[in-house]
Image 1 (cartoon, rainbow, N blue to C red):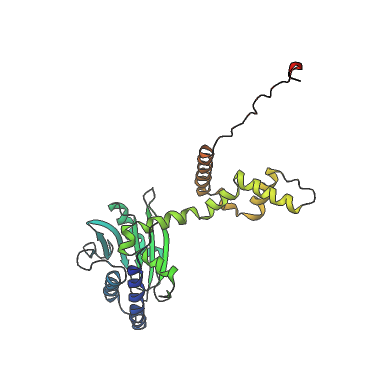
Image 2: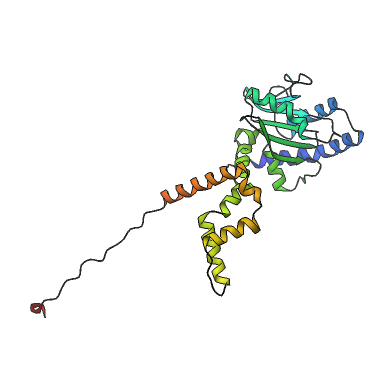
Length: 268
């Protein structure tokens, strides 16, 4: 994944520092939803780099039906944004309408924000429609000097969007989920590694594959990690990767020694 330029990260950090007092003051006044939308538009422009007049739109703001704001880049709908007043505790139910509309429009990403808190959801188009929370940011808690936090903010920036950084972050996060990690722990190669390490610290050194597998399932890994429907998908993913690795590995080649000459009596 290509990096965001220093110019962009500097902009994000500088503007975040400028807006933090504004957000704190607005939260103290408990401003209403309309005023929060105004602040969010400014955040989208100054921190995240979207053009206020051509890329941030409220044309989808049909109250009670659609999201309050939308982000369009080169005519493509990128995000739908549901805004709640700055003092509202954001709940999953708040994003449902935005997710339903996004699914109907074929939009992958929905943001639920109160100005300070930003919750980012990936829409799943299977039935029923799903919404996976991929990222949560609290702009009042982010340290403008912390490079990792600025990196996470850059995932939502226009420059990050143009380089598909949010999609890459989501894909990376999916691989690190508990189901995939559980499947990796139960894979043959990891079981073999565990058996080898156990032999190093054991007097008898006898641990069968089945014995280690049962112990992991009973004592180490939570039951749902191995039995949930998502666990089966993770098993298939790990098995597929394992087969791919085997196909790519160089075949074993047996090098035969050249035949030795047999000495004859005449040669002595």
